[in-house]
Image (cartoon, rainbow, N blue to C red; front, side, top):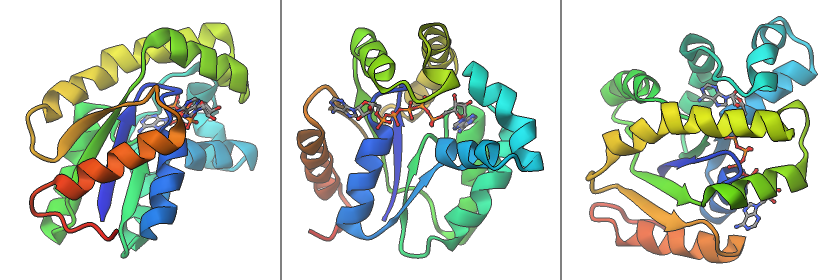
Length: 190
Ligand code: AP5
């Protein structure tokens, strides 16, 4: 099973990816977590990406692809990707890598949450440099400019759907599972 979670900062991608990974025994691969781990450990890669992560800007595509290639190709039981792709260019590059391997994504899930609720959640969480009011506002702008076009790009594909991300986490999860199980050509384990 190969899934993508797309949503604004604070929409619950990490929360839902954890639930899906446990339910289906697949790997949770978070571009943000991988980047933050490098920043925390002060690797040379971490030093390169820190300024983007702290400011809420997108890390250049080539660096993100570098960090994801290995875990994605290693996830032979399947994966749920949280935070990637974030742009049409990233989606096109990823497709070119996985298509020859027959490992294209099987479902893309958009977690739909309105702006004020996103801000409320992120301020309440206060993860670090990127959860201040100013940086949160910038991250939401970057999402509107760079990631909303990705939703338009995927719109109309049979394997793309949106769920109401304002419900409690377990209800969002059950909605996602119901929708996955309804997809044609998709036999999800129960
Ligand atoms: P990333 O880590 O992906 O951050 P994000 O997209 O800003 O999302 P968050 O992790 O803040 O939120 P989430 O949607 O995962 O929600 P969560 O479950 O945590 O990226 C960080 C940075 O890395 C980017 O800014 C960029 O610099 C870089 N980066 C990452 N990927 C990149 C890429 N592909 N290309 C380029 N750069 C990239 O929940 C948030 C809070 O809400 C939590 O407190 C949670 O408990 C709560 N919550 C969750 N669900 C619910 C619910 N249903 N009801 C109430 N509260 C809820």
